[in-house]
Length: 175
Image (cartoon, rainbow, N blue to C red; front, side, top):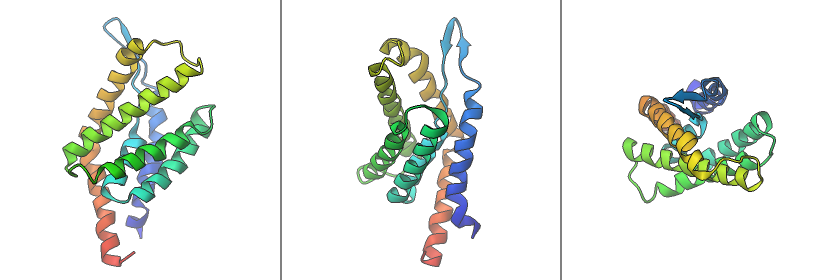
């Protein structure tokens, strides 16, 4: 029974952990202020889409995207649209790439980078941020990608293990 709830439980924990890690940002490296945006939940949902079930990942993305919009930003619909889209793209791309952990990690980081660029462009379009793209690239996108890549390097195999446990349990029980 617990294994059945394992995937959503990990998602809830990651949703709750993101703001705790966000408190460590921004940081000063050299003379530059850099922003490290934790994207643990969407990285996990990308793994769910690839290793478990794209449809379920999209539904989780819709649910957690709406929660993210409600609790963390003032624009309802932005993450509600982006999270399921990213999960769909991850699940769709699995037909064309090998499901090796390194390939999955690279794909996940590329999808998160794409999401960050879309978010920047949206906020720039509505004049919510005066940041130039070059500043965004150097002070937010690259540090965010590096930080999330380190996160995946440490926990990507755990994500795969947790998801595979559920897949095996599902296959045994026929559920």
